[in-house]
Image 1 (cartoon, one colour):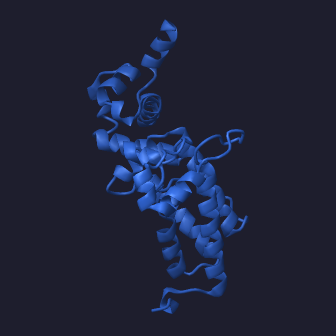
Image 2: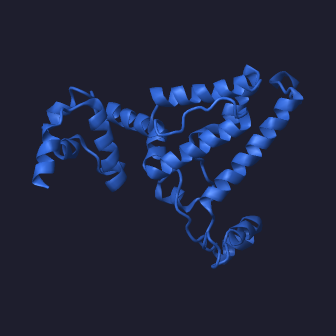
Image 3: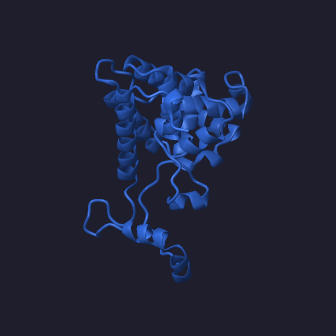
Length: 238
């Protein structure tokens, strides 16, 4: 173990090594626990050595996001726009599930990172190659929102109450108090419907992955219909 640690200390410091170590630390203990000091300690260097490769914590976080986005499957032209868009979105979701801190980190940035811009550009390129007008592609990107990156803003996700974001493990639905159920009967009904049988492969609570793919399929089917109709924003009803 001591020899392994010494080998790591002798490994030349690089931006890539810093970012991947930071990602591993965030995966293990959460993004809030990450600091330049404990990152430097993990790498076996003094904190000032990090600043030769990353200017500050913000640049570090941007680089970490780009590492995660880099795990998304690359384009595979020739499979058709619908299959390709769906495949890469689900790949993005898998990447975010490996790094649960990433959705909130992405949301916290005021500008998109280079890797996110490149990914989104390639997705628009897939739509355009599939015959989409720039007009329809523009509205598709709005409709997809964060779902294009593999996560969504769930109205009924209990983790929202704890300030977390992105993909979450299924949790049992919280029972709605009787007075609230009486006031909001429709919400109470779907809250009760969210519970799965105990013997199911999902267990109790909503199947987050199923709900994501269900909505994704609905969106892609609707987009396909508009594309076939030659929809443009100029033809939308008043």
